[in-house]
Length: 166
Image (tube, rainbow, N blue to C red; front, side):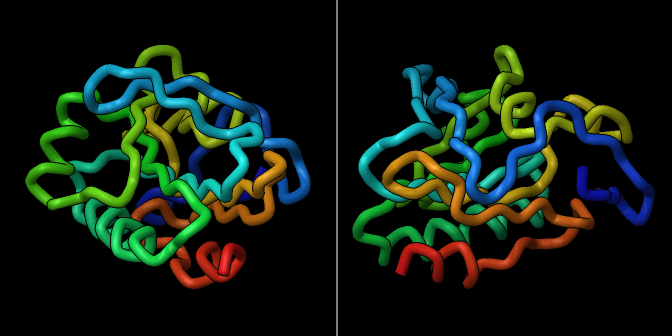
């Protein structure tokens, strides 16, 4: 697994590491209205899976706002933001921030996304949350882009994942 740091200190990730070319596991998460949200697998369109530790932090909020802006221009893609935040908090964040172009999904129930995508933090002060990452899944359900941010407190690359689709 790729080394990840939180404020300069090494952290461990748990779960199965996925790489470009792997099938994206289909997972059911919880939407802000408590509905079931399916992501991964083959959905007949691109999926941008934007993973953040918590929407209540500045970097995560910025990352989500930027992907929301980018999502508006994507014709054949669904953009998700996945975190461990409770669905109610995700809903509040979206209404406060005017987030309308992406789907928020919570992995709080059984941490299945974190485990199957290998992005669950196994230690550090953020233990139990998801690390900062971006995955792009193609129309057939294959991972065509992956970035696990080396330093959790820093934003991901925005151009590359969108470039894979455009």
